[in-house]
Image 1 (cartoon, rainbow, N blue to C red):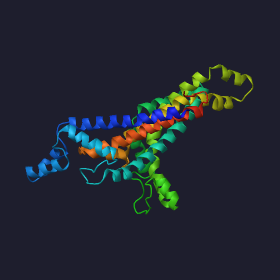
Image 2: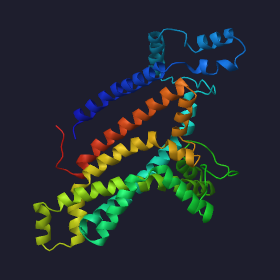
Image 3: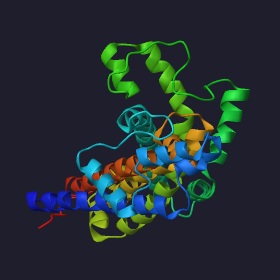
Image 4: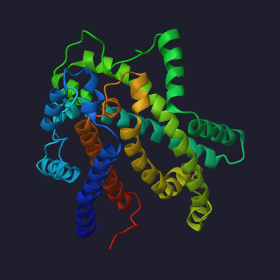
Length: 335
């Protein structure tokens, strides 16, 4: 992995962010109306509406609005929420860590379950275990997140009472916020009560997302493993008398895991921006709910800032995936 390749990828990062910011800005302005006009019927007179439009700069031409938006963005100022008056940096500090935690745990669950299921399916091809895994994969791909989430709530929360229904932590438990990543903060402060409550609340939403994503991982792992198990070096390893488990998990899986890494890098970005429904079902205070509320309220700063931050994390995650390739397979070298 050359330094030049990493620098080239980093150079494209601001270009992608500029494109995401520009498209979001234009998409919000193309839709007729604006946040002030949507609540105009609640204002006392037209003068109040005009003052509000002038205060937010919505009475200026679109090119001036765009120039002001990009100027603030370059300075790192995402603005203030039009509906709540809270700075967006504070809102993102409150909402982004819970979504990242949920996405990472769901990613680990989908990777572990999906890879193990895919390897088992490939190693037991055309047997009952293979058919069972393939059925699980099809169901995981076909069933939407919100349906699995609702079923889990009914079974594990309502009927069995094993897990909380909603929220991030049980009411009444005090904890100190440092990074707003609950796992990190609880470990730093030694608050094991809060950590246990958080993990209980995290389990169901992470499983709901992880099981759905595991279907994709299992299908891709099975396909990649079947291709690798046919190559010459696998037959050579078997002819040397190596155990089948070592052949499958050490020689074959290591070379079949590259497509799975690519998929999970894309999945992480999808989980950040696409877990809106799951966060709604479980009342999870994440960035997905923040984005949805911003869209419904036509809150320009919230929508623009949230999409830009999610796009940044998405691009950064794909760069990390590219850097992992040569670590998994030393034959891959970028020049």
